[in-house]
Image (tube, rainbow, N blue to C red):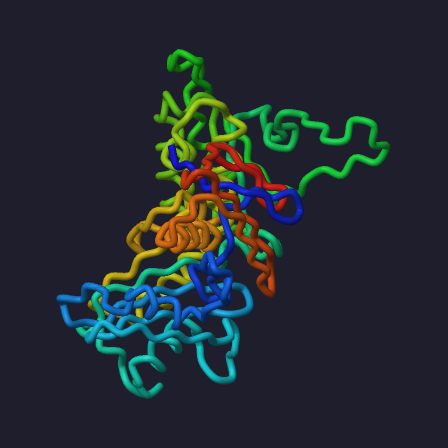
Length: 365
């Protein structure tokens, strides 16, 4: 299970928190209600004297849709902060890298010395905004014969049962390939996979321009053989992103597993390009990203399905820890960014979690 920190935001989406650790909150309030800037707050709380025994830089970054906030801990333990535009192609290629360069006073023509940086930890809304704006990768769905509409039909939810005009949620996949082959709920093979037909269908989709595929078969959480075969076929043909349901979400219920798999196939290519862009300029440095469950993971393991609430999850964790230092255990966080608005709730100092959620009309687990 990968629990997601939850709250409610616009468009009925359930978000994990406000979208940045500090920068987009702007100000942190003490019980006395006198506002302090982020820099003043950290020095007031003596957080500037953080442990930095390695004598290296450490960076915490929130990459939002409009602004990117960068916090750097210098080798001497002092905290520096910076806010830059997330998109400014005339001035720099990437906002996070530009923020690191400015704080370390490194010229654009010079290489960033990775050996002088202990770690870079990031929360990002790259995947969140790609989902909101429907700018993910063109995706193909592969499923059992006769089930091409399973994710469209889903649970037949009717939020407004008396509505005369039914607006169905937009699907993330653009085309479907149905394959013969079937397992029972007990994991017994009823019909072998038609390999030749599957190869023809996947090859045709590849020739039509598809490079990302989500493979979702019935009962694959228990019987994975057919999905493994299809993955090998897709890899042989040349698909660049192959999301397989028994790897992405190995749990019962085909619809939830399928939704999560298509989200992963839709967003991972976008996310991977961004992660590679950042990691490529920080050689020799640990680069970690915040996941929707509020935990950090290595850049090489960061996937689309775990990135939807990356920035928001970092926001609630940061807000909770900041208020904890002041003895506050109940809070409501509101973060209005340039692209999206995130709202979070914390009661009794405990995070609220959900295993199934919906963001921008897209279900996932």
